Image 1 (cartoon, helix red, strand yellow):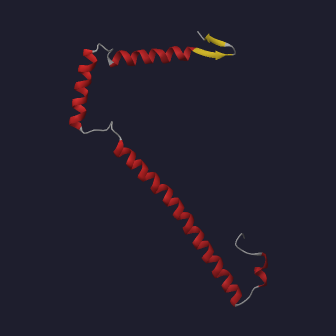
Image 2 (cartoon, rainbow, N blue to C red):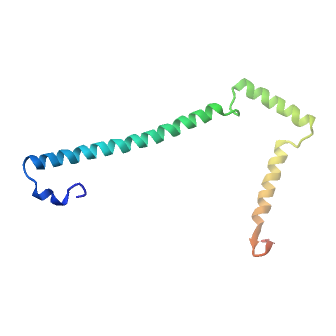
Length: 112
């Protein structure tokens, strides 16, 4: 109904055929133009994501990752930093404490 013009009932013969040829051509051009826009957006996002993955410095090969693990262990030991297990346990404890608190108007109160 949206493609059928109000005065299209008055057309006949060649004019009616030309009207429908124009309408079909218009719909074809609009459809493929919008499809092209959509594909351009998707492909641009894909290219950007692929470039971001290539630029990611945290992703290395296996040998470099092994060297990094060993050097991290040495640095942690030498500087007497807490182990990763202790850090994870402290973060979990902090999350548990945070869940116990709720914010009220004017200050914090303990839910326990």
